[in-house]
Image 1 (cartoon, rainbow, N blue to C red):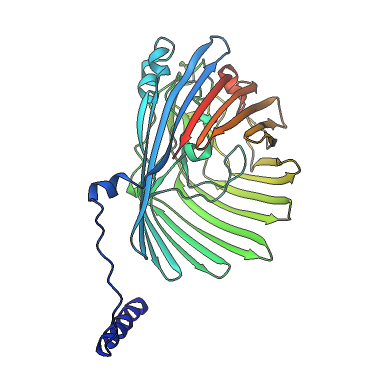
Image 2 (cartoon, one colour; image 1 turned 90 degrees about the horizontal axis):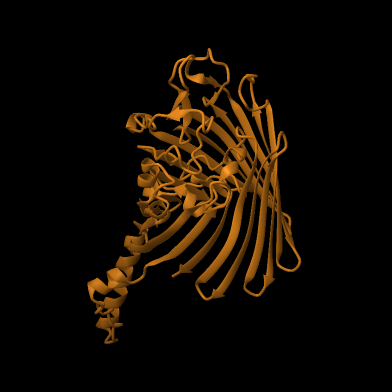
Length: 437
């Protein structure tokens, strides 16, 4: 209503100037730019070529992918804005290495069009509303996901691509309220989007007992309005501390592998999705050259595989508490050091699951600019309970404006039941060439 009043007063002032013989300011002329040109300009995005070779036996070309993403933003007026975006991926490795991968894997990972963020933003004073397909990011640490519980993820390459590529937007209705240092957010996801894990036989398929068990197709039948997701998040800035708390009830985006075979039969699993509750908190504080971050998540309702053959479905329910604490240091010579400690606590721990009651790990990330346009980075994530680790060195060169070339390696080690060790035969070297526009 205030905006309407302002428009009316402006019209009255212009009329008075005309009555007193003053020249009214000229009205804006309509744009002469053709509609077709308005539609084809203003796009942003990137095109990226990624080539990877898995050098562990049997050595094979594991990726020859071209990703192209386009996005555009605009507005109908100062209160209503919009965004549209999409991405197309084509991986020629599944044609070149056609004899290495099963047909189901080739069909699943050869080519795909992704509907990315496509939403409308409506602003009304202290309230903002977003309707459509969107990212809802409630936490972000280095290397792994913790409090980022709303995002679905494309895990067909594990957690190796950048997070902006891994995250899958959700079709959601989100309302936000901001006043001074307080922020409140409510989200409803009518039909949940779930993680993409690929097909058995892929390099990073996460099924238990690789090479021993077989798998039925994933059951996504619970993905409907009756199993919609919802959550609330409150944030407050207090003396430089950015603190938030959230509650999220959802159809678990992560797959749980149900054993569908009998005790005396060959082992067969089927990935399914259960309903879970999650309560969590995040914090961040800037201490100048050091930034402290922390995340904590309690999960109720998730099930874990057990080695006890008499258990129906081969699963036991285990409530867990995950937390991570990280320190980010800005060092001389344009160098960044990030240290993290994380731990999962199992309540009423079942001794026949693979995980111990306390599962601990740590990570170290070192990033430094070697020359004007050359950066080196190394990330190591390691379990503190067992030999289970991932090491990722990378060298990137921004050789021209909007162009970046990178080479690197993804190396895994540990036991076949570990988070990283299960991919011990998927070590690879890779190169990327990216053009952003």
